[in-house]
Image (cartoon, rainbow, N blue to C red; front, side, top):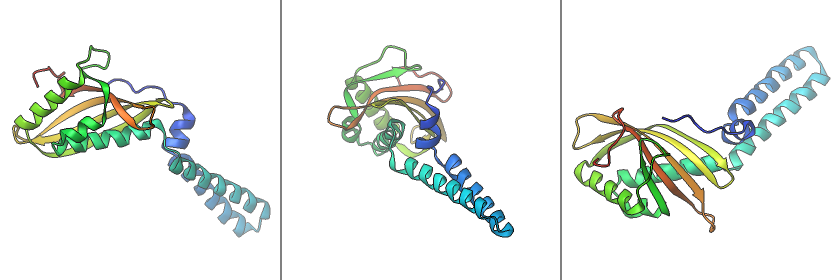
Length: 199
């Protein structure tokens, strides 16, 4: 899997994962509040109330603000579900018109949407997916309208014995109408090896 792109600290710890900071502030508020009540210190009760309020605000901010990385994760889950269900019409509806399929690295030359859908169709016909588990899913906002998603799956198909691990990188963007589409789908590895177009 390639290194994840840099994401700002505010986005990472306040918008996409507010629970460590928000939960930490709420915990500090509880400890300070308990100690203040035991000692009868009104000044510490005010500090505890401020810490608790800040913690709740951080968690609420993360809950209500949907970042590009979170849009990317949602779109990736929908795409995976469509492929697992062998619903290529739904999968195609999540792809941008200029979407590209890359093999081994997002920087390698890409194949067009028709090739991508043809490969998905061939895969699902030859190896029917019987079970799939997403083992890793992380979204990284690149800017306000684009994100990169790192995905890993364990997939069981009728053509192989056992589960096959795979790693993917998807890039998504917000379209002018406000919808989000997948622009690049990169298969990094299948069973620990770089894929070939023949899969």
